[in-house]
Amino acid sequence: MTDVSGREAFASPPAPRRFPEPLRTPRLIIRRYTLSDAPALFGAVNRSRTSLLEFMPWARSSHLIIEDTEEWIARERARWLAQDTELGFGMFRRDGAYVGGIGVHAIDWTVPRFELGYWLDDPSVGRGYMQEAVRAMTRACFDRCRASRVEIRCDSRNTRSARVARACGYTLDGTLRAHARGTDGSICDTMIWGMTAADADAARSAWDAADDALVA
Ligand SMILES: CC(C)(COP(=O)(O)OP(=O)(O)OC[C@H]1O[C@@H](n2cnc3c(N)ncnc32)[C@H](O)[C@@H]1OP(=O)(O)O)[C@@H](O)C(=O)NCCC(=O)NCCS
Image 1 (cartoon, helix red, strand yellow):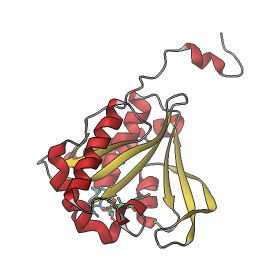
Image 2: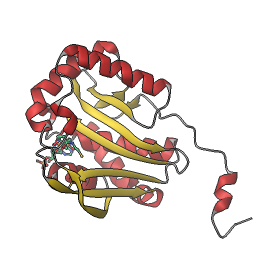
Image 3: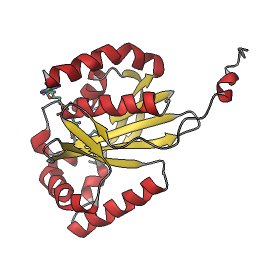
């Protein structure tokens, strides 16, 4: 029986409240961090700190010494066990090299709704790794977690991040004016890129083609 309010959806089994991990893409493995990843993560943040500081506020005060990184990983592992609303994953090439981080934020299982955030180690920029990871994470949100919506938020000046969202099929739903403070202290606008389940269905053949091109 169809309920015009859409409430009949609540009668179906709830989404599994656990984000899938690890995820495999043609070139990458996306997985939880372990303590043995600390040197690679610490090295990447410190090598890329100048680039990260443009848009990532955490880059100013995080991972200053390796013990910070070890503590951060321990906290991330505890968040995973608690299935917190913020989960961080590492992106590794198939040969094990660390390329960057991708996180699922503001998780709301009651919708379900997810937000993705990401960064790359400098030497891994410009190779399509982030689009590959975002495609996989977006698929996981919709296919494994029954997402209603996935979002990517970025500073409106962050053209590289916006390009990743657009290339993966996200739509610019709106720009929140004077919404945040940039890492330089200036007031800035926040772009909200969104994808619905219907958008994801429309994007699937493009995702498959992009992934196929990586293994061809
Ligand atoms: C945002 C960020 C992750 C984007 O990195 P990126 O390398 O531009 O994104 P991708 O890994 O998807 O790579 C796309 C680039 O690789 C190139 N590329 C090479 N091979 C490719 C392939 N097989 N598929 C797709 N793109 C490919 C593309 O041409 C594109 O380069 P261009 O933009 O110069 O044309 C990176 O700039 C970053 O870490 N910035 C700092 C942190 C940050 O701002 N995070 C976002 C906060 S909201």
